[in-house]
Image (cartoon, rainbow, N blue to C red; front, side):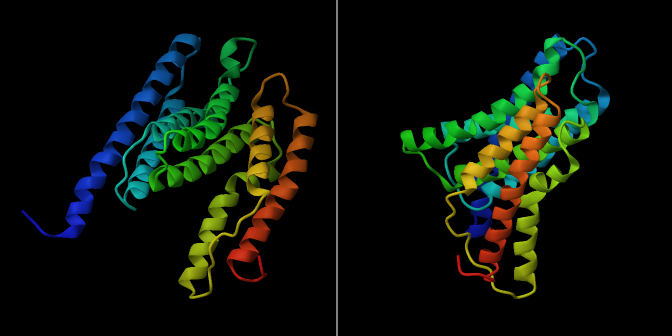
Length: 251
């Protein structure tokens, strides 16, 4: 028996992290089985490798998020995990490219992205409705939001459905986090992220732009123009948040 509080925390968080990882892997496996049945050519080795890599990275994310405290894994958190599974399978299309042709499988990237994005409106409401809001769920929701935008952007840009400039939208949160870390490392002031009424709206518009680009019958000049129109205020808002967090302006 030990009185070491660090070991006690690890014993509590590892099972939590393990449950999230196993649940995520199970959902990814079910999605891959469905793909194998409906996809004539079947997922390539490269596709499966990227999906596996995404699952490993998500497992590491679960570990990091769980390490900030011990919280129950609620139904709302499992909805967020379902979003992460959809993102992991979508990541496979980064190397495979959306399936060509008229078969229904060509709609899979748009469907996976729609699931990952639409469930964002479910997990938070479910947590509040069941009085099961946790720090774990809130932190995981933010990280999965960022993954949804990043992976969806990569798939659409590499397929030529979105302009390359939209990559800045996909990478915006990660650049923001890296910038905060660099500010802290250099001993410069870093404030909490201030409230911003445009943040969720612009995030939803960015997801809409990505989804439209992934829909096989819509990708083209119009969706590219809409994406560029969304990216300008989206990136401007991130710059405003950065100036506020780095205390260069008064929020």
